[in-house]
Image (tube, rainbow, N blue to C red):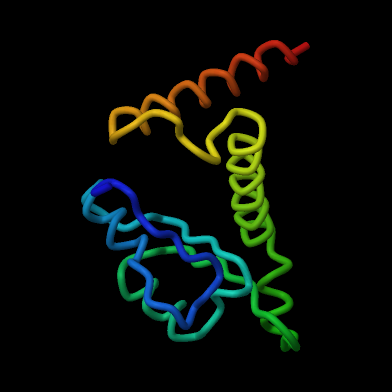
Length: 132
């Protein structure tokens, strides 16, 4: 299928398409925030993201951290960006587990879009139903 894309998770040594390039292609500018997990940490990755125009790069450093790095990671903006990324991961997991996005039973690109839209609608209806 021409619309299917391979997503590699947490393997910084494997060749991946840059999501910053995709964001620039779609919106015409670099994202203001890039947040990733510890598996993507390297000074080269951070420097490249800043070079491409990202203002805030939030990638926690694994292992031993100096006092300066520890202080940077304790900053409110850093913690909020990490929480935002974790919330996105939780939403993706919920959409896959609860609303059937783990596998689309529809065919083609239009069917894949239909599956995603229905999962999002179902998720929003459950959220509205739980609101006080």
